[in-house]
Structure formats: structure tokens, C-alpha cells
Image (tube, rainbow, N blue to C red):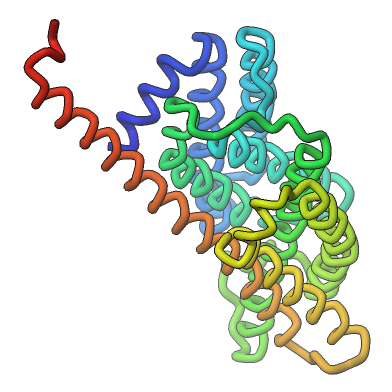
Length: 304
């Protein structure tokens, strides 16, 4: 069902050039994910740079996808949830490449590429938002900047989550006096610690500004339903969790692994919410489509 919805989306909601670029991007990131995991498990036989080559192809294809969408139909990449999540994947990939060029972070691609591939697979549930036109255009500049900043902040915290996972795994193995082969290419604990702290220092102000602009763009109806919006509630909880992690680390209340666990909890909360909303939205759209089909089948004049 998801593949059928995505096929309809790629056939009817975009130009052939954009469809090809999107398919190439998804395929390239899946190849990058498999190659990166293989490089983690068999570093002597498979090299992480092979995954980076596939990831670079996927990133370039995503850029071509958005350019083709804009040129062919004048469609901005923020008109529906499918494009918003796809843009998130693009930003995640760009942040990964920038971070790995600024600092030597071997093996981090074994966590980053599979996560991006999973985002694309989950995003298939949101393809219906582009084919059925249920989302209103984003005509507020504040709302557009809010979405871009929030996506960038999520990308930074995604990198922090990856570094936190690697830190916790490596620290646990060191305490057990074990040296698994797949962890020998991990960055040092100190490098991972600095990366997590840097991501929080950069991402928290970015997320705060994004939320402020989003609230400024709210109308009266949005404010009245704010407590019933799971995205807003979850985002605020994430902000509070990250703020607590930052303040707790600074004042010395969070020691050892607690700091990294809070980062994982915050990002997992957002990821679970968006996956849940995607499943519910896809199910509701399918039920609406089935109901419309039943009405047409039951109308004797529908075929006239």
C-alpha cells in the first residue's frame, strides 16, 4: 500500500525529472546505509568512503529533486508533509557531511545513513499529503522560517543522538574490558563528548528561535487548539528535555551517562510522534479514499 501511494505520488505529483531524482536519492541512501553497516562490521573489506560516495549521490539527487519540483511546477519544498520530511533528510545529510569534514568522525556514517534511509521509508506514509492536496500552502514567511530552523535544529540533534549512541556503546564496552571489532574505528570518547555538547549549544538556540517564530505565526484558531496538537506538545517537551540536559550539565547535576540518555529520550520522543502521526494520517486518508470509492460504486449514475 505504501509503495502504491508513493508510485502514484511520483507519477502524478511531480515531473519525470523530479521523480527520477527522488528514486535515485532513495536508492542511493539505502545503498549507503547497507555499505556503512558493512564497513562497521568488516572494516578491512568494506570502506566507509564507499558509503559516503553513495550518500553524496543521494544528497545531490535530493537537491536536483527540489530544483526540478520548483522549476517544473513552481512548488516550494514546504507545501506538504512529504516534502517537509524529505527536506529534513536533505538537511540531515548535509549536516553529516559538514560535521565529518570539520572533524574526523569515523564510523558515524554507520548510524547516520541507516537513520536517513529509515526516514525515507517512514516518509512513504506521507506521500498522500502531496497527492491529495490536503495541506494549505504556507504563505506566512514566519512559518516558513520556523519550519526551516526547526528542521535544521532536528538535524543537529540527530547528529547529537548518533554521537550519544556511539559514546554509550563505547563506554559500556570499555567498562566490560571488551574490544569488539566494529568499535575499533569509533571516534575517541572525548571527541564524541565534545560533539554532543557542541550540537546542543548550536541546536538549542536554533530550536528556540524556530519555536518563537512558529508561535508568532499562530492565528487565534491555532492558539485555541494548541493543547490538542501533538506536534507542538512533543516539540515543547523536546525543548524542555534539551534545556534540562544543557543546564544540568552546566551546573553539575547530570553526571556520566545521564546527559546522553536525556538526548536520546528527547529525540526518540519526536521520532515516535512523527511516525505515529504518519501512520494515523495514512490510515485516515486510506479510509477516506475507501469511503469515496464505496460511494461512487453505490451511485448508479456515477459512471454516466
